[in-house]
Image (cartoon, rainbow, N blue to C red; front, side, top):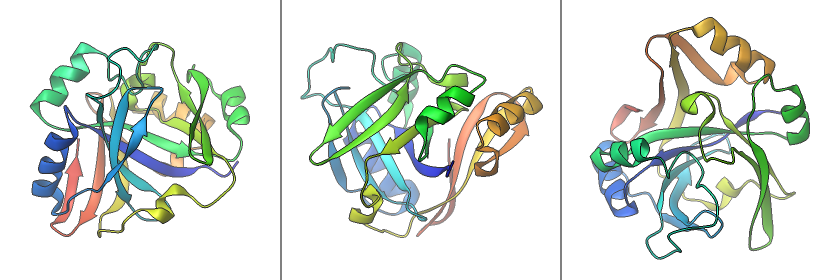
Length: 212
């Protein structure tokens, strides 16, 4: 399996809140992206190096309040909503694979159901737990398999923001490392001991920045 970081999501209470915060922290204005009709969310996106992208994600106030299922990345959970009202937060990292079914079969933990999404002439399959939760609170990645074609990041703006590393903190780091190893993604993140936490280290026009 060819597993690599596909993108990473920063959640915001609103896209306006998120864009303003990122301007202050990163020194760039993250361009508007698109809408996710199946989830009633929308985003802003930009390249983040190595055919990956930065996603700023928020609930879409113009979309139906109830999309008919729990939103992804825990966005319906009150605890997540409360955290995002304070400031944008690291939500999830997403690993791209060329064999999603093999990832599911080999996983020692439940990654959720595989949901098919479409936009225009592109489609993608993504692991999304039915209740919208994040496996291990976001420490484990979601997995995505794109339909054939160029990676979406190739059509996005490069504003000089690059992902340096995904940082995972867990009170039992060896346990987390073993799961990542089984998923064949241990090379994509740095694991350390401590209270459970997810963060992204970035190179930006403002220097090195950590988003958590």
